[in-house]
Length: 294
Image 1 (cartoon, rainbow, N blue to C red):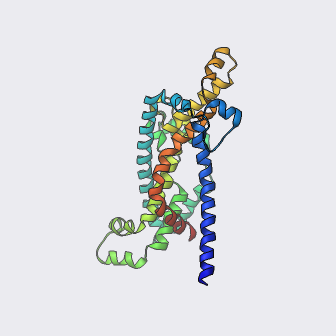
Image 2: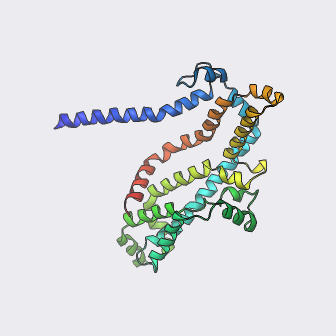
Image 3: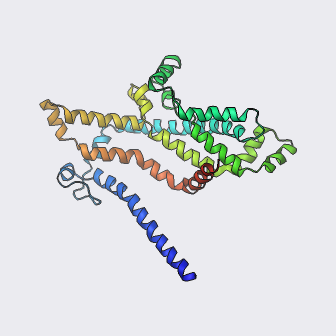
């Protein structure tokens, strides 16, 4: 029996190692391609190890270093503020929905679920936010539209509260004279660290990677987040490469277009890769417990 368990452990470790290699493989190609010379990429294609190291793509991006730094600062601030706001609103809605004594609980739950099935569309949303809420060319445009709170997050947090917060603990808090906000702040939230960490990671990733709101509502450089800025720089390069004029063609020859795409992806993903390991243990537990049970 022990020998069979050892064989299973060895086989499981081998499988996990192979899966890790497969997961790391695209990242290695991405980083390697971003520091490989343009001519080498065109002639020989992509490789795990760079053959002719060239940092031209990063040099091109850093020619606008002030804009890059400002974009990072804006993205960090938007991610922090948006994540805190999203988490606050989600918890304040999910906690009442997790209480079985909430009047008309099923009606409110259906309204939340209904928003997952139907959406007004891009054009009505744009008209609403730009014409009536006047968020065009403001930092609010990077925080509010479509990101402040999602039905999926509410359902996930509500399920976690129902499955992992014993009703007896809540009753004990009421017997001791605690109000609902005190129960939420001093009992429920300390017992919900896995789902909170999971929410921080999921929502933070959405804010960090978002560029569509900047595309729709922002047309001034000083409001560009890092994702919007990198996307605009990439579009400029593609325009130069596709231009038929001789002057533009000469200029485009000096731009590492293929490596630039990889460098843009690296600069956009690197901060997230650095933060993820600190949330991993909470992320696995929170996403499993919060999503399996209904």
